[in-house]
Image (tube, helix red, strand yellow):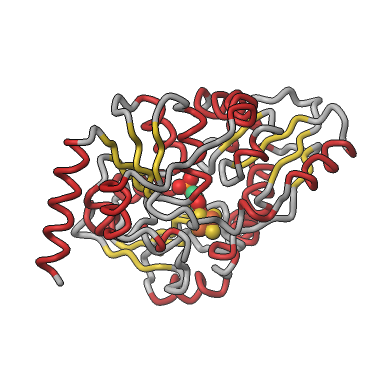
Length: 317
Ligand code: 13P
Ligand code: SF4
């Protein structure tokens, strides 16, 4: 098994060079897939890597909306995904008709959509954002403009709280993985690891109550940071703390442990696994490289409309 996997990895490394392919992998991918990637990162970082890639093919190890974003940014490249069925419950939480109706109810409002949306939804947006730059995207919009923020309600509430924005309407969507991380999971873990710092993804259902707890001082001096996946990785490396409770998909623990061998990381919830991210296996990466199959194609009229919102996202850090 081990030998087979090693040779599969070697073959992937050889093939990607031979075929001029760049492999991008999200921080939630399984360790074997992260190991063969040229870059690992969060949604924003991977979009940036796609935009500046010199290779003619991008093999995107992540979920479908991420590969679609790469295909929109790089219309002249071939974008492949190892499994076309790797979806996202958050991006499924708003349909194009729901968005169009919502916009009709708020004429003149600026639409800000999380990158976790389909290409069709993005084609109806003014701005796209990720967890890493959502606050700054909202800050860039004139204060007198109404904002429709979609689809994640926890990220939306977090952004509204941080920016103090009152004229922001938030879609009631959620990611089932992050919504499943409850405040009680965190309290239990923090109690068991007394001097731990706590890092939390803004999609988590515990973000909102946690912000109030932090504000009211009920964390008793514990340090809490609300960050994107790449923001978490940077934070834990730079922090002097030795122990961390991590509230996001458990795939991120691989890189955290690899980059910080002297530190301890425990997941806020062991059950926080995204089955869509885990659909990407080493064998599927290999197959899609060999056969150049599972191309992600975004129709030109949708891609051309969606590109503006994505380019705005890429210019705001
Ligand atoms: P990041 O942009 O923080 O990587 O998050 C993407 C995502 O899908 C979170 O579930
Ligand atoms: Fe989508 Fe949630 Fe999976 Fe991220 S963790 S890809 S938001 S379902």
